[in-house]
Length: 299
Image 1 (cartoon, rainbow, N blue to C red):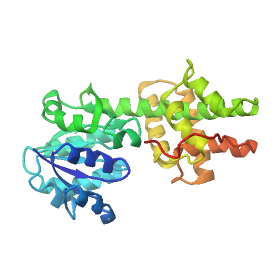
Image 2 (cartoon, helix red, strand yellow; image 1 turned 90 degrees about the horizontal axis):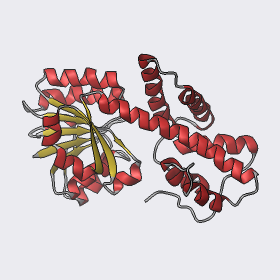
Image 3 (cartoon, helix red, strand yellow; image 1 turned 135 degrees about the vertical axis):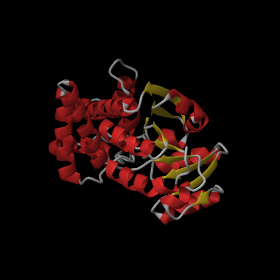
Image 4 (cartoon, rainbow, N blue to C red; image 1 turned 90 degrees about the vertical axis):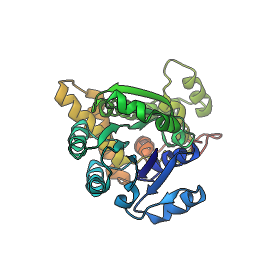
């Protein structure tokens, strides 16, 4: 089976490289031609346009930054896809966007899976990321080997739209945990505790979280380099608030977290690392959260 992969950014580049490493037939494209060298070194074919990438492909995988970009790419590839080919969308989209774009692809004769991922870019680099799947069971089975090349935990959540919902839920929790972790570390610092020991104690306690154990290290290093931006965080929190309104669920913590990220974007810019949300508290109190022995990036 031949795959096309479109969108080779910080996350997509690792995902495509994992497919290549698993020996799958692959052609890739990104509008940034500077990313080509990585895939030339892997022996992967490069296409100059999305339409060129999908010619002859059995399935196209997209990993893109927004619904607007996903829709624009879909418009480019639909005329070039062979009948019966599948679209595997790995971007984080709202459920309504997933269903609307999937209907367009299905009306053109394509099968559709939504497969957003969660866990962080560092896990994508190790092919250990979690893959969340929405779509028909037969299509999931057809592409399971490819998905297993990308991650080590795969969940078929149900029909199209299901994966979009759980992905937004997991991201919502991550951002809430991030703000909470910053407050916890600041309380430890201002209370006179050694931050390295405090981080270790929290990690071994009932108060720990995946965010504390991963992004907490980048906060203590001072790099904040999680490869995820304030803009992307606010996009996902916006999706969460939409779901809350649609399902009648009051999301008080998510709402407060969204407003904190609005302040973070105003202070540091939409392209700043999402982990820098903790810097709001550091700057307000004139107290940094640095500790020795923590990495600048997660490997």
